[in-house]
Length: 195
Length: 359
Figure 1: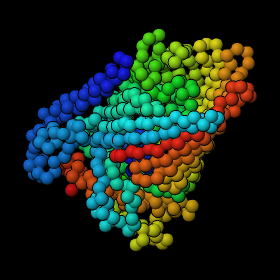
Figure 2: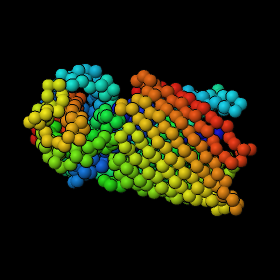
Figure 3: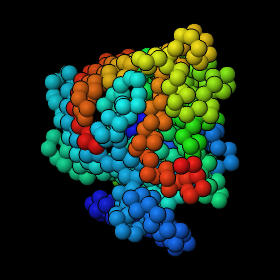
């Protein structure tokens, strides 16, 4: 996540940035947003690990931010959750857009050194994950958390490593959002939102 | 030093002001929606959320909500390789980042970096950065930043170098990285910009000789592997020898490719309307996959033309930074200077820093 990246660089907090581009791209009609910083604890990590077919690094503990986007009537349009993932050539920042029901609306790379970025950001790939929740995305990976070779998501060979990282990131994002920000989500959604 | 004594007061004012904005905004929100919120909490009493709520346990959320802070401690040595002399510098400070919000809306971001700096045992207070960035438009396209802000010029934005050995050439172009004043800034889908009007005195707010500085940078989105920007600045900058009229235009570029980053900056202008100045900088850095280890090579090439002939100075710097433990970073760099005039040859410098950030 964004802070984890800043922390691991030893950088000061002035290097933190809001995902304004992601907000504008994901929600062209959004009127304002609200940041919600929460601490991802060891207990949260254990809960998240219980749901994942792979491990997550202890560096992912600490303060992280969920961004909620609203329209002018204060209706929740969706969420932005930026995660920093270990890539083959360095850290990759992915800004995930989730609907109020925690299904994927899309994603953008905020920072990446990896090859295959264009293929993974393409509409062809995004269309395959849009609208999916944790269970459906989990089905693209095998029991070891690796990309299924058959019957899984369609992606060019050169972009398969980044596709695997991206799908893992999606699972972590959904699980972490639900576990760490679950109470806030209830309030953000309001009485008529998804349960 | 009146200036020094006034800085904490300014900091307190900025902090108090931003919190007051939040209190008022939160109060307004809770006035209107109090019944609905209370009803909601009655239905799910374990769902108390510090979303700008001033009642009950949420009272302290005004201060603690969306707050990050870190204790930042660093020890640095500079070794002059010609005579072996050694300077040691210590920093102890607080790095605080708070998003000021109402229950449904971010109002802005408060950043506080207040440090004590000791040079060979002589300590003084320094304000590294201290600003509030007000979100004037909800979409982030128009914000107003005020306080002790980074001067928007070249690679000085975005912030990447506070407290690190690794630096670019803001000092050469401007004389400092941060100044007291205000800016308008924004992040658009494909572009970002910042234009500032500042005091022109750098770390300390000083008004004698009436310094000022107007500067600005427009660049492509920071989210792409290739980023380019154009900058300009103009003003009377207060330095150790008095005010210098500075005028610059510049271009910067950064590129991320595989494990390598490339950064470069070129600027041209005049000092005191008489001295032509051309400053160039290029850096290649290598990063390990988790970015725990980073190495870099920097080249600096400076040209001044005070009269009829150009004077050239260049430096080659090699450095590295290692993330030793979760909160500890070790950095070192070696700088060699080149000049055609052997009498003006500056000694090589070796620098090392151990930094601890508790967050």
